[in-house]
Length: 461
Ligand code: TRP
Ligand code: ZN
Image (cartoon, rainbow, N blue to C red; front, side, top):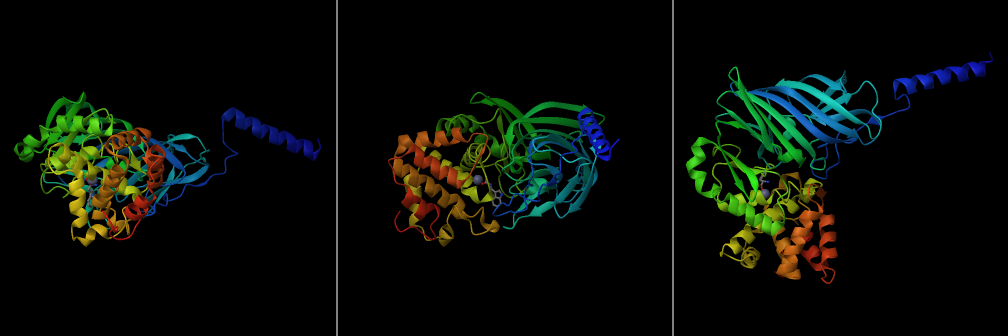
């Protein structure tokens, strides 16, 4: 046999072997990347794959504060991958498998780098399972606020804006990668674990209770939550949806009146913003010194103590603006906060209080320089994404659009926006393009230049 024939036979055998065994000898992957280059949090999230589903199976013991469990992340490779990262801050990783085979892994800062035994091909769906445990961390944000895992008097609450969810489960922790979730949590009997979506089951065995929560609609990880405490539960219906409210007993009396208005707020919000995007609603009311701020956790926002009606309106409005229509990057935060703040103005107007025009004028005439510190569409740094220009001046941008198009067109435009990007992501450019397309007779250039992108207080209200 000639040398070339022998070579050809050998290659043929190799190829045939691959066809039979389904091996991916042709794939030459590269690492996925340690961030998605967010302009404000460049290392948040990871490149190279999209998560479809998180299945978390967790156990928490408040006495000692130990969390242990398994995260099973189903994802699809966006390119040929030799390795990929998950974001995880703190905790000890005991084992990682990819498609059931044990994988090598390393830790560097909040990156958990996973090297599957075989490269993953572009488009391939894979399942990475991480077994981990430890005492979860609380993170301090650039703006000084605390997020991540927050131990409370009776248990803990997990709040993840902007990056805190990496303290309690490994994942692609950037708002651009939304996924469905199944969160199973076991806690000592007598405590309750409350999360997003709907409660599928609750079982007590040997002094421990296991709660299974399912979120079918896409969810950004920063609005995932887990609240463990002595919560009292009330189930009801509102706007045709199941309501699950969890209230720390010490807050029950204080919050009864405002929570009685939840159905009314839900109906008003659906009328104003369009159909509610999720399959259940509710709230979580923790104790007053838990967290220090409210957060629009999906399906049921978290409040540190009883909210007032305006705050309830704000966090429920976020279900449309933030949770369903999610910012593509942290630069687009005003699309969340501007609309949630504008929801408060609209509610007050519809309740017969100040009109949004009056609220707008009072802000414009006020002498608080903080409001004009930077343009809403370009926060001056990661420490400022929750500052007043994002909230109040963001709402002023929304009001300028309403002034320009009139009330009826504004109503249609807002509903069209929540419909167009329902369960998706959007950025400021998507928004301005959408507004221009829906109101072709109006020139918005001056509004964008002065109100959205301009430095300082615009020359006229
Ligand atoms: N986004 C929350 C809201 O508007 C508030 C919030 C969450 C916040 N984290 C923060 C405000 C950190 C200041 C700092 O409801
Ligand atoms: Zn808000």
